[in-house]
Length: 197
Image (cartoon, rainbow, N blue to C red; front, side):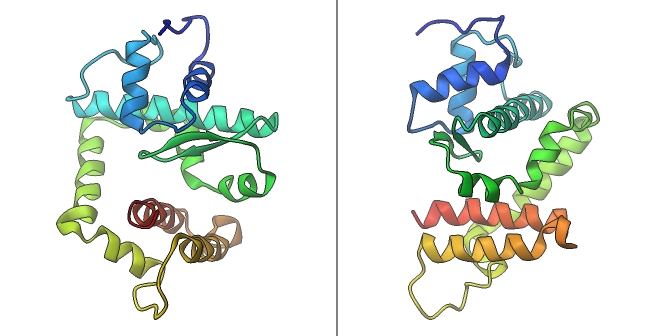
């Protein structure tokens, strides 16, 4: 396992790691791999401090979205980006067109969100996340959001992804929808992917 060249930017370093491990990484595994390879682009500090955790997460996702854009431009692959699975796939123009609508991309590519997020803001983000996830109701809430909680037929990922595409089409900000609603739809898909593989 070689160190990553400090002369390379973070997206280039991530591309090397993702090509080495086709099954992908969780966000945590990818951060640990970068630290083991002596990457100088993320803080080499314990992730126990919430602000350090947020900044590390933000820098990683900023670089991942840059890499995804670069891969699309070069038709060099498709980068699946969630906290649970970061994986490089072969280029597929149809899939890329759908994922390109991801509102999180704008958030992570705007460095003012990194600069302007202080410790109290991180506390609010974490409190909001845990409130939504509390009590193991994440699956039920995601199914309700997708309006699949009363479906008569057996549920599988094909049906979930079909409904996801419909909701993205309906609620995209370019079509008068809300960015916040679209973020909720993307989060619900991540949750349901944990239960329906």
